[in-house]
Amino acid sequence: MRSFTRRTARKFALAGAATATGLLLTACGSDDGASGMDHSGPSASATASTAAPSATPSGPSASGAPASGDFNDADVMFAQMMIPHHEQALEMAGLAAGRAEDPEVRKLVAAIERAQDPEIQKMKAWLKGWGRPESAGHGSGGHGMAGMMSDQDMKDLAALKGRAFDRKFAELMIAHHDGAVAMAKDEQKNGRNATAKALADDVVRTQSAEVAALKKILDRL
Image 1 (cartoon, rainbow, N blue to C red):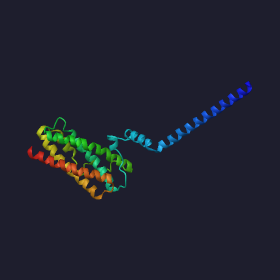
Image 2: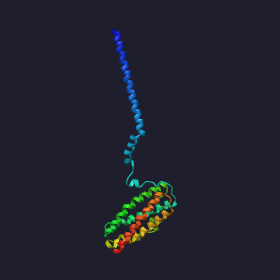
Image 3: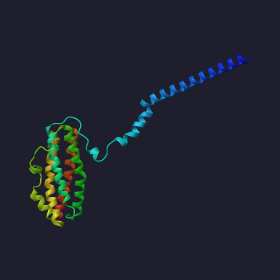
């Protein structure tokens, strides 16, 4: 009787263990299945969308994205010529510190610095992505391009202060912007790359408006 009782108890114990093991395996299988669905379902999308902002570049790094799509020689020339053109505009703007007196001149200087440095970084990234050099050898510093100042122009500007500086700066920047607008209009007409043409549109719009503002400044100086 004792032997029968022990055998019966052992049989129930084994059955209970098998049942528990089956339940455990079933639970694990459910977890795996749910996990597999999560990778392609809404929760995975939510995770991806949550992580996306930290991986998305912003500021200068974003402005340095390559220009996707087809491009032609006009796009390349536009970037190669506009880079030194913008760089000289920034050099002229830099001279305003401690020299410019007119508040409207100082306001335009700030706008030029805010807009043109990021544009330089964009165009450099385009040329790198296109496998083209940043310079096409348009003379020393690009002085042969439309609207570019000579070394003497820059020295003369640096020698001025106050109202005299404001007037000379306005005169030179009008000519400089006119050159940039002409280059941008050529890109609008002959370029192929959509991103480059969009920047050309911005140059024409913003620098034409700045030319109008500079002419008004000259009228009252």
